[in-house]
Image (cartoon, rainbow, N blue to C red; front, side):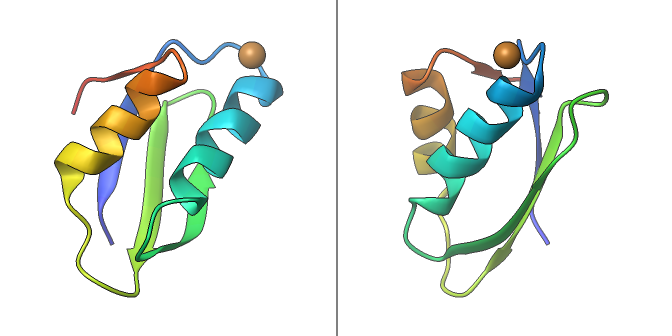
Length: 66
Ligand SMILES: [Cu+2]
């Protein structure tokens, strides 16, 4: 299960935004985002390009740090 760390989330609205942005990507399902650790994990139903994931997160104003 791929896991990334998202920087800049401060509340549950941020968590929802990140979750929705990830779920909108092809091949991504079962997204789990943890506010405190910033960790976002998801299941792949098809290969997912992490570059695409990163861009989707950055587009909504957060940063992917790992
Ligand atoms: Cu927020």
